[in-house]
Length: 163
Image (cartoon, rainbow, N blue to C red; front, side, top):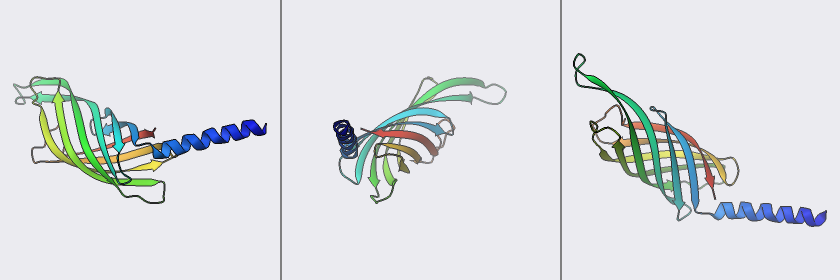
């Protein structure tokens, strides 16, 4: 019985120790206002610095042309974000960060042009366990050409696993 307890305790300590030191974190999230679904992978190369690659898929409906002679198209956009995050390291379960990077949006419709823009982002991971967190963030696109299928500001809510 004591051997089993020592073994289980050793596995738990080794697993949590490994999870805390791992530089990789994967996330799944829902973004608004388009209710897109996405995933991200983050590589943390220092206690305060990380690089994240996120991709999502969003469904849209848009009227092209005028009110009377226009037509409605349904299409998907696939935003890809590459951002650098600076984490504010603290002793709590909250891990806030700020960052910046590049956003690339491609479309399934030939009537919608692809676009690339700079962005800033910020958010927080609430650590439920040393390896599992709930994530809330916001991304702001830098630029003045706001279009309905790629708004200037987006939020997302998701879960993350550090392995």
